[in-house]
Image 1 (spheres, helix red, strand yellow):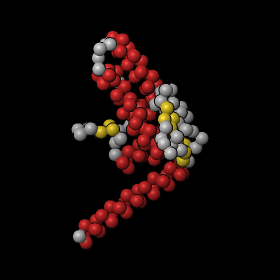
Image 2 (tube, rainbow, N blue to C red):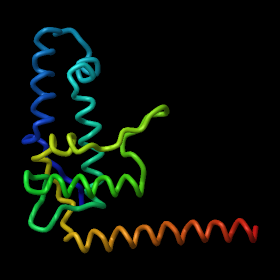
Image 3 (cartoon, rainbow, N blue to C red):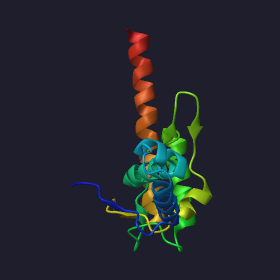
Image 4 (cartoon, one colour):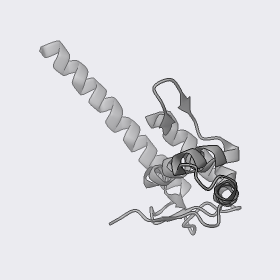
Length: 147
């Protein structure tokens, strides 16, 4: 199954899109990458991609298929836990950027087909992933000791 998403209702997208359209009028000969960087579209795309892929682990609370006014705080908590497990979703060779509450709130309207978890299911899946990771670390250590 493919992962699909929609961002047209997100405040962050609307802001970057409006700035991009304005820059395209003022700088008609500018390169697309330069315009995207200047208007914030590049930052929006990096955040969007980070959140979209993270939803494969975090899912959405039951009854929701996106970030809403009612669940954005819970989604921030889930994304923060996800990043504690796997590290920052956005990074360069010099820096890491962790998801902030403000960023998640600006993405109200983001939807994906990643699925749903109750809080209890999310907690159980997170504990299962931690156990798998710890078991793998132990297995690697044992192999190194035997090797």
